[in-house]
Amino acid sequence: MAKKQKVKTPALYKLLGPVLAIPTGIVVKKVADQAWVAVRGTPPPKNPDVPGVSWGDALAWAAVSGVLVAFGRLFAARSAAKAYTALTGKYPVGANADSAA
Image (cartoon, one colour):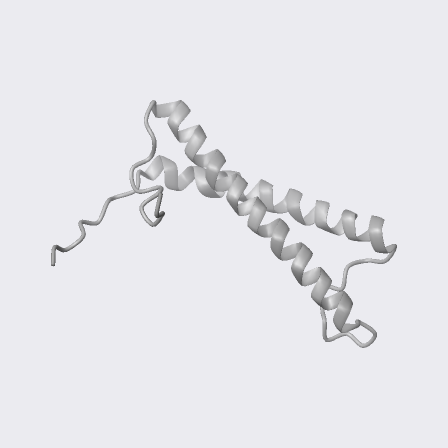
């Protein structure tokens, strides 16, 4: 069985990830908090151990925040690849190494 060669991801692409992920994370957190308050009228249950937080609220917040965080990560990763491609003219090597596509 042939051994897979490890592909080195470009440093610029590695730098673009956090540069885009940090502000995206901040925006996602604010949007999630504001959406929860708009729908529920109360602050989100950030700590499920606090007395008075129901299982339903804790699970709903986990689902909402999980989906939004996953979306934020996807947005940041795709934006980093797009920015790298715009700057260098080629798709970053190793950026999609684990994908089945």
